[in-house]
Image 1 (cartoon, helix red, strand yellow):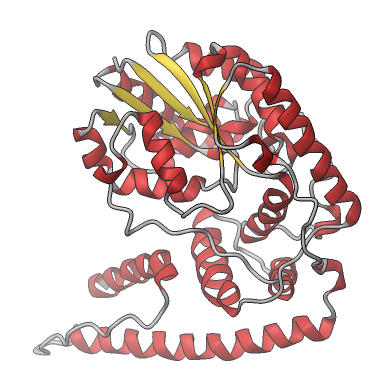
Image 2 (cartoon, rainbow, N blue to C red):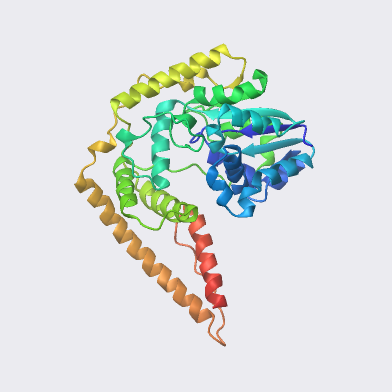
Amino acid sequence: MVDRVLLHLGLPKTATSYLQTIVWSNREALARAGVTVPGSERRDHLWSSRTIREDPHQRHKPPRQRSAWDRVRAELAAAPGTGLVSHEFLAAASQEQAARAVASLAPAEVHLVVTAREPLGLFTASWQESLKNGSTTPMADYGRTESADPRATWDWRTLDLRLVLQRWAPSVPPERVHVLVLDPGADRDDVWRRFAGLLGVDPDVCDLSGSFANASMGVAEAETLRRVNGRLEGFSRAFDKGVYLRSFLADERLATRGGERFWPEEDQVADCVRRGEESVAYLRQQGFDVSGRLEDLLVPADRDVRRRPASVSDAEVAEVAVALVAWMLHDVRELRSELAGLRREDAPGRVPAPPAPAASPVGARRLRRGLGALRRRLRRG
């Protein structure tokens, strides 16, 4: 059994994807340094979080998903050193679920790791993330609740640092609760270096070249995506959301336009200010291991003036949509040309031509994987 397990709980939109990309792309290097990242793929930690949170939909999933948490624990039981389980949806677990998860990892010493940032930027980023997952909720209506349901992953249940810690922290001694406060002025790799310190490894054992930060959309672009989501049918699968909504449409086509940054409504801003103050006051009373400045968890008083999504006009949405149509026509033509070339390559007696260079941005990894699967089907068929 590993000597200790680090459970990285989130919060969502606090460099979690960035850290997880580093971890999963450097599993062998981490293993050589004494850190086990259990599971055969990144989704095993997502599926484990669903089991921990007792998501009733999990019982209807394929056996591989249902057994993920058992397989993760079995791998940790068979390994030495340190183990790491990381998924931001763990933040939604109830206090009872958290306690059971920690107990199920005995006799390993469990540590909790929570990455955190000031609530206003977090709230704004989380609304964008909800759009990338197909939501149609206007920002003015977003985050108005603190859900009692552990399946709720996109409201204050997972976004409020104090609420998450109050559910998880009773399961371990306070010195085993580690809060990594994001430094808004630091280099991007700062959070990785501090995270690696908790793992007990030299941060330079990992190659960071494949890591990337999630892209943000401008206000008109975000509102356009929200309206597009309302017209989509048949895009409810996780693959469709990840490949087409998130990577292709949001990250590659909308975020790359730039656009104006934005804030939520005034009362939502005030709510963010309150939650930041309450989290800082709570942390000052606990014996947690805090890395970073508590002041960085407060909403800045001198924040800049920004628009609100409700102010976006139909004309602005139309301008973004027209640009999208023009861009996507080029995409369709390029894809048809590529598929035609693949069919010619498969013709009897034809010498295959070298593959054409990718014309899409770096964020197209998932789309290219999908195209790779399509090419294999064409060659078989």
